[in-house]
Image 1 (cartoon, helix red, strand yellow):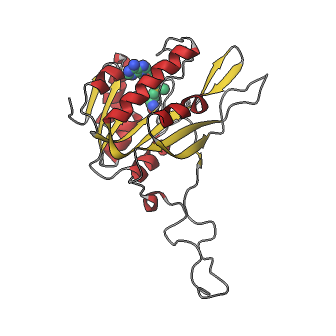
Image 2 (spheres, protein in one colour):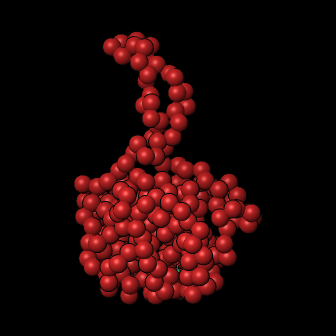
Image 3 (cartoon, rainbow, N blue to C red):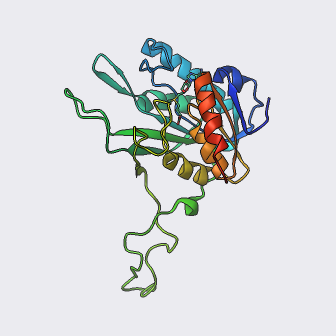
Length: 255
Ligand SMILES: C[S@@+](CC[C@H](N)C(=O)[O-])C[C@H]1O[C@@H](n2cnc3c(N)ncnc32)[C@H](O)[C@@H]1O
């Protein structure tokens, strides 16, 4: 199986194992966090990590050399104990030969108010590449300079602009509202990530017409962003109710 612009209602391990090896340019996903959400069944942490290891191994097989994986996770919480999943999964990516590039902190300013610890206001995106010859279109995601007209005041470059006129590197802390009740992108999926988190990742880590895979599609945010940005997508999702949401969202996308 390797067609594109398809949404498959199936287990992503089965789906990925049926794909050609080294056939996708970019993987972006957010797996279940083992929190007993409506779409998952909480298991022992060891069992969850074993399953995640299988997923990461399958991702490595289908990713092209030079491709990237952006793995978006929060924390697993059990009986008041908080385990950041990026810490628990990092070594597994290294085990399968991935090269670490960034740990992007996604900071959102709202959420549940905790009583016995600080309220959680961030999750992360682990970015790894398969090898060193990877795509990174920095210019496509530059943000405005703080002082756009600032110039060198001495030396050979005196009078020239000191910052890149295309803007500055956005850095690795991104402040983006999460998709809660009044968010314009909100669907009936309870853990949707925002398009503003995904679009810069697609722009920076892939080219137009590249193939982007999301093994855990949920409401289809990655497929929507990929379509908007003229990339192809393929993805898996277990639940029919979410598949309907994905098709509904995709039916409104124009690129
Ligand atoms: C954290 S949500 C992803 C949300 C998504 N990023 C979005 O923006 O809507 C994880 C999704 O993975 C799905 N899922 C869980 N186990 C799966 C599996 N084995 N194969 C495919 N999808 C699965 C769940 O139904 C859920 O919709």
